[in-house]
Length: 111
Image 1: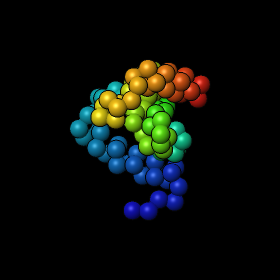
Image 2: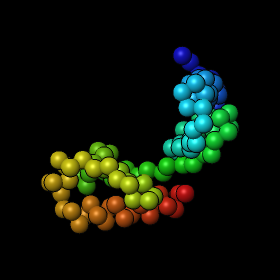
Image 3: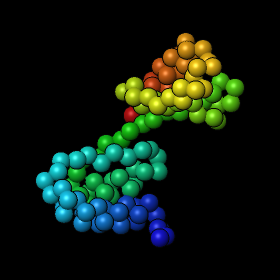
Image 4: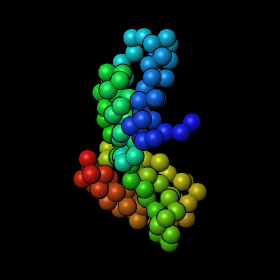
């Protein structure tokens, strides 16, 4: 399936979700979460069509100290983390904790 824009994709996804949700979960309370930057237009259209609140999740990657492009973890503004435990076992835990703090602060700033 081809989408002209992210807004177009959001509108089409909202139609499909509306059919599914009204059948399976007619009285469900929910929040639509979007990831900046690209997913916000999709999330907006879905939230609008389904009359649900929209919120953002702002994750920040933690890159390996020797190769910053290689993700060894991620953190959100509220401190939720995903970690590659195998890679972290080889690194200084104090370094990783400092990176977590810095990236969490950056996610908060971006909010």
